Length: 276
Image 1 (tube, helix red, strand yellow):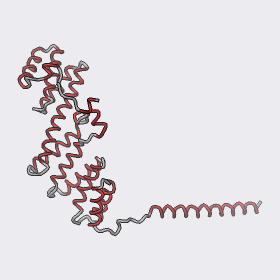
Image 2 (cartoon, rainbow, N blue to C red; image 1 turned 45 degrees about the horizontal axis):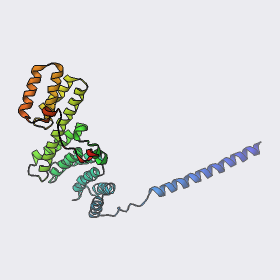
Image 3 (tube, one colour; image 1 turned 180 degrees about the vertical axis):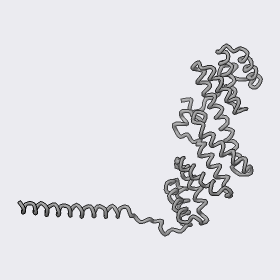
Image 4 (spheres, helix red, strand yellow; image 1 turned 60 degrees about the vertical axis):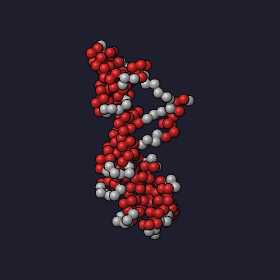
């Protein structure tokens, strides 16, 4: 019995040694795999910036972001570091990484509020939030900014407004102003979408409230024509004749040739994707 116990102990010891050796080999192999040489280790700041710029131009946005981040971490006080920060935001924006892009551009604005290119940073922040590229499905569905969550639209408006107000001579100011107008129209249309939804479901008071919101907050927006029409129809459904007449008077004064008065809807040419 004693001999058998010794044999079992000896076998366990040998087996444990084999497992330990195997584990060491496995760990060594994993270590070799994870310790791949960094080709950029000896690159200068100029080399890193040049390669990142080439990657950005070629549309390899993940590589561009990686190289810009290495540049900033290795040469934080070099002449390329600040440009790398804003280029990182742009690369993330082009790659569809909205959260990372906003974080990068906000960081740049916070660290460099008086940078010569801070106007571009605000413009880029507006573009990121504006996100006017809906993609293939969005184009064919006819979806526009007014049909999406207005939070990003308001953030875009704020960024463009800051740019136009602080840097009226910026080369980005005219486009920012045009986008601001589009956003105002879209936000008004967002309220009208809601008013139309409530009207069609018989919630006439709610429809009036949302239409009034559009008129109050977005004076002059094209969507307000339909907002007034919804108010007329809603007041009529509620039996509020005086308020209906008041709304109709305002409608005829501001939109004397309105399609809504003539046809009950806006007549317009269909976009090409709606013809299929």
